[in-house]
Image (cartoon, rainbow, N blue to C red):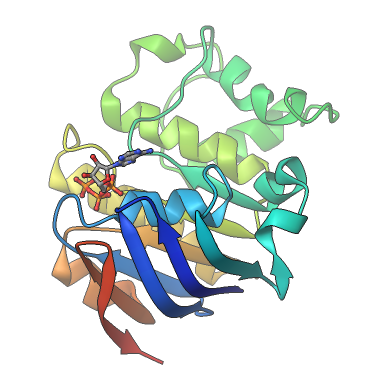
Length: 211
Ligand SMILES: Nc1ncnc2c1ncn2[C@@H]1O[C@H](COP(=O)(O)OP(=O)(O)OP(=O)(O)O)[C@@H](O)[C@H]1O
């Protein structure tokens, strides 16, 4: 999937060699270790200063970034919610890509997948933080990504809501031909779900566990 070699980004990341090939890879490490920066490099939201990142054998810099971000999608720490209804937010997944919008049945189905018990006509901006995260996730799932990059949800979420979100993503990935790279501060979550756990500290990989 991803293969990093001699990757440097400012004085934030310095990774000699790293393979991300597992179904579920978890990144842990203290605040400021460079975890989010690493995720952003993987879908080319930012580019390396030196070194290479290959995605399925191709240099990320050689891949059309729009095409790449259709396949490799990030659920950010703070959810992105558009003005309007729940339905408007879900339909944005298609409109942004100029695709035919899915029917309401399909939209309702994805709300069930993310355990969001709301109507399509509800105002998205009035949802709670956790609900907004799940709506954001639902929009991403409708885009049918190959790789999901999950940054740790903002600390505004309580632990139970956070775990529910992670479990939803893990179930989704496990049942399908998908890959997940996620950041967490929780060792328990890392051990429970990670096929591989990468520990970052001060921008370097200090430990890799798993195959
Ligand atoms: N584009 C940037 N330019 C300069 N510095 C940056 C940039 N992005 C992040 N940083 C800095 O790089 C360091 C690593 O940030 P990053 O967000 O990757 O850490 P993190 O491990 O995800 O932390 P947290 O767990 O707190 O989210 C931080 O000191 C941050 O302030």
